[in-house]
Length: 337
Figure 1 (spheres, helix red, strand yellow):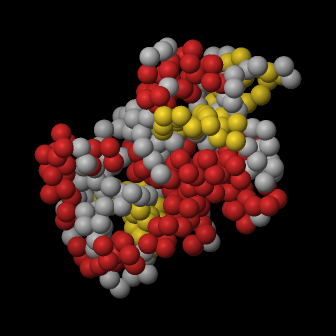
Figure 2 (figure 1 turned 90 degrees about the horizontal axis):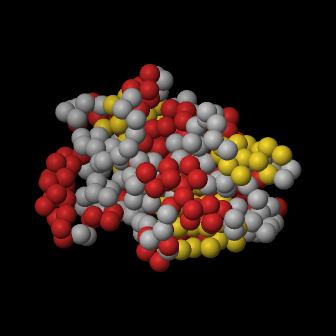
């Protein structure tokens, strides 16, 4: 049985006491508490597992993953469920609306869950819920996406960039809303020594610290482009980077919500000049990334999506592989497995 003790350490870094003694446990939320070497180790382990799956089919034998969904998903559900099975473990999925988290005390419910499983993955609407799980859990907690960070997507993005370019120091141009995907992508690109360019005309509501973007800028690996940048200057950036990245302009649970229609239309009208289209990509061999689900005709045109779809699907598939590297690291504490 784990006993969590509160020390003067990050919420994402926890000392726990087991029968065998002290162990160090980490959660996966912001990459601020991960070193560059750790992230490279997770990604290289993910690549090794992907290439030699048969050698890792039993590495998590007997281990159990609890996945809890307050938000919908195809990729997060499939990638964690299948990934855990491919490692020899088992995943137990529950919808938030069907759980006692809707009616009970969060702290006690989290502690109960931890007595049954070896790791928790939560896909929540708000960062406060993620933080509540991390604060009270005695097993690793993975943020499967909330309104502030999307770390597993960023790991998949970086794994895909590494596979396509052969290096981690990638140059990325993100065009879209400042959101959870943008935050995690910015963290990992700067952490790996690459260059992150952001063209973000508006921000969704996130819970990052007030100095979050200032700290990224101070690394020298992050730059926000002016929203009135000329097409000519933007095309120069497109030609210089490894990939142009875009994401939905409207958070997925609001996209088809009639109560949000007026706000959605305002955002779309504001963002249409920043659509990824053939004219922007013309004359370059720059890749296009999208974390899916895609809305052709909005953030990206149908023809550009179809041209780059195989790369986008590689990126989506790599969610499973990147998550396997992360699961092995968080559950076993080893990167040399």
